[in-house]
Image (cartoon, rainbow, N blue to C red):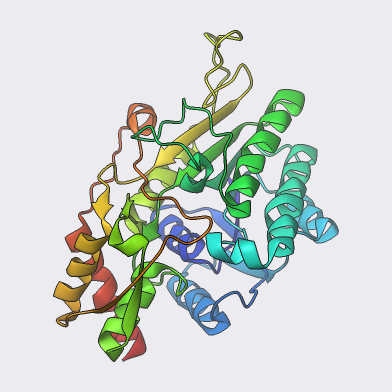
Length: 338
């Protein structure tokens, strides 16, 4: 196996590479464009930690933008890539309203390049990041991969839904095995500074007010990073097979007659936003100053993952409690920012 991880300097990508290095003697190539959407310093320090951890010289890194097809295809060809985990994307729901072109380039053009390079270089399995955002205006809870997701409420969500459609086309046309993972609000050490839990922690420590949208009437299926990584690791060798019982008159959106599959990865236990804030307060040891605001464009009120398919496929269910996960994050935050 020769594994390519895109978004290698990102939150999920860096955790994934570290875990693979811990447990497997395989060659890993990481790529990332190191854009300035958030701190480049943080991204470089994630990479530095990976290189220090890599005692057997199994990890190499290239600063490459996946929107550049010639560079990407050369990497596939020269390195003999057999498996791909595509985590590179322009993230953030709210930023997609302000800067849509960044999402088109990275999430659509970039992902198309990954698909093309994968099929031309006979990749054995492509795993890619989707998002709980694809559920959009859906209100039926918990969110199931068997439900239609045709009403996105942000451009970010629309690009992730588009990834799933593009992947299915390549599975159908070229027999490329593709697995899409809908992540639910991932948090933990080395996380993204644009995420709410990160800014909440920062502002509480610094005595600044935190912005609480929809007047606190929000619920999220917060999922600890280690649980996300465990799910990905278990799926690397589980190539999707064509669903021999596929019903063409009542199709299941999560599977196909082609080698294609979609999974949710969430904690399966949604938490009220105010309870989440109280957990951060507990571990920081300080009360938050709250600034209540209306719902932001592109946001949804609640997320809740149905993970039965994941559990049945790989025998794993995320199980890290909010109290444990936030405790780990706050400990890392204090150490990192001294």
